[in-house]
Length: 139
Image (cartoon, rainbow, N blue to C red):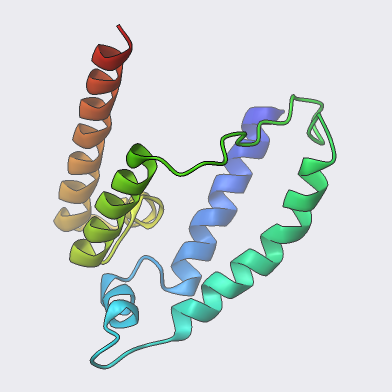
């Protein structure tokens, strides 16, 4: 049941990304172009996403198990550190250069555009590199 729920949640998320324009690099880059032809529509998408997510997140913080009876897994770390700030900077620079981030990239992957294949391949290579470095750091 949890896998089916995860599948439908991912499907809903992907459809939402496509409908909101988050999978369109041109729209994302126009949103990031504050000094040029700025397109504020993605700000409205983000505000809407925060509003929609605030209710379930508030509920989740008050419960120890999910609606499926599984343990609730919320982040417990609250402090900022070099790794979080560095990762955020790398993510933001990559988003600004490519105009797409991991969620939309996976959603766009099925369109057959070679650019999305290159992006997802680079993303997976980065994930493997991170895992190797993290393994090396902890051992």
